[in-house]
Image 1: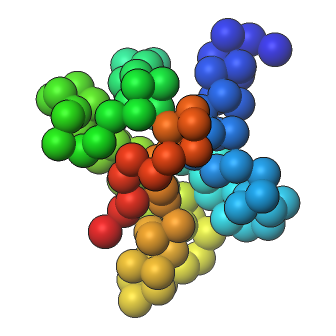
Image 2: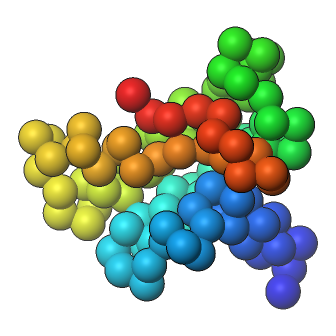
Length: 108
């Protein structure tokens, strides 16, 4: 597995723990969203998760990474066939959790 693959797996495991992540369409959308992010965005997400940073503690780079993640997840949901009126409920599934499992951000 490549370095990028390991990073994606690690971030995915923290963002969407197995207990909440099924082998369904939602997990596929989550994987697609992470694959669309740049190395810089992945690194910023890793920083947030490792340090358990709350939104008010994010720097500009970290805020940009979360916006990119949100946008990528929304694109994946649209690609999966979800209509605009369904997106708010789908987007609420997007949650950042620290390595310790503490929720640090939930998509509004």
